Image 1 (cartoon, helix red, strand yellow):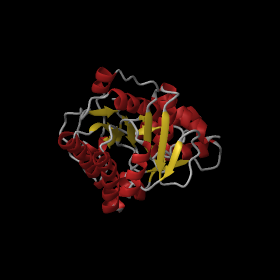
Image 2 (cartoon, rainbow, N blue to C red):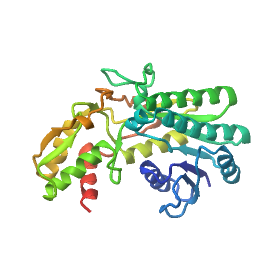
Image 3 (spheres, rainbow, N blue to C red):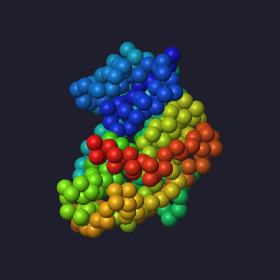
Length: 308
């Protein structure tokens, strides 16, 4: 029976990963770490823990001795990284280093999934592959590139077993409205119920992003952590770029409304990358991953969850 340790287990992706893991390995032992006091996820061993404290990290790793670590905990907002560049960089790098260095110190036979971001690529006018040169354009993306380079260093110098992702935008039911698609749909649902005037407030809706259902994301993570090649990086993406404006139109059609789109200057990010689209040939050909959820289906499920 394998033991999986999931950091950030109480977050959006963490909860879905636990569901995914149970569907593949019902008998697997799951250990969850998060900074919140308690978890509502049943039947896991849970530790409230701040990953910035290496002594606490080592204590849990020594006690639990996991076979796999899925490192999801991070400050994941580009906008937040501009507000507090040092805080984002220090948190994201230190939390990863405390895990990797503890595995090195304790000499534990353990595989780590290091989750990165499409933001690492920077500006390209084509679908990006894993062999493209990285051009990070925000404090958040610089931290993610640094985490990836540290991962490779720990593989090469210390012999750790680390696999990596560059994950593109993921969406799904129960995602926080701090993120762009849930914030749109929350407004659209309110309009459809007559609780908001027929106007949606937005930032730059001309940017193009590659959206993937979170359930397809965690399936990719499971394949990478169990079958991926050590030191390899895998894009986790749909391979299709969509304008935010088109997302609004798709969701509006599903709700049978036709709202006015109003751009608010305080919602526009001056440093937004105009287009981010990934190439997913590697994860499909090497690991057999397949996308299961269409964008339309995901949007419909987000709408239904907002209406509950």
